[in-house]
Length: 143
Image (cartoon, helix red, strand yellow):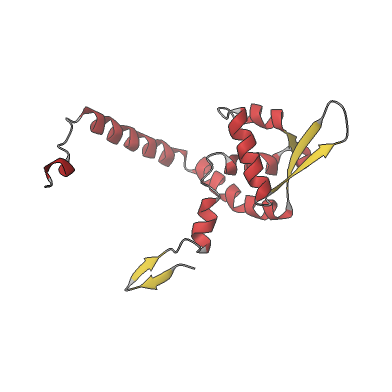
């Protein structure tokens, strides 16, 4: 749990909130979980997932699937057929984790105007920064 130290909230590296947010360090993890949560039959093959997640590379998809499997959020099922067939599905733990993700995704759907405003603010700030003359390097003047 986060702790109060000298009147300030401290999130230790092993605190549950930090460990939870670590799951989002992979850009695509929540989207893969979201896709599997809604997939017909609750299982999907790699190619199907890649086609449904526009912009994900095959390498990134495999890395994401591997990490989610190692964490116990998804299960990989290999069929004993030729050619090989593999599919992925949420584990019971993955299903419990997918529920809060669904709430976040619903917030995004309900608040598209807010997301558009955030992107516009970021774009404006980025454009302003790239248009500004370079500031002097403060480290260069330190003796």
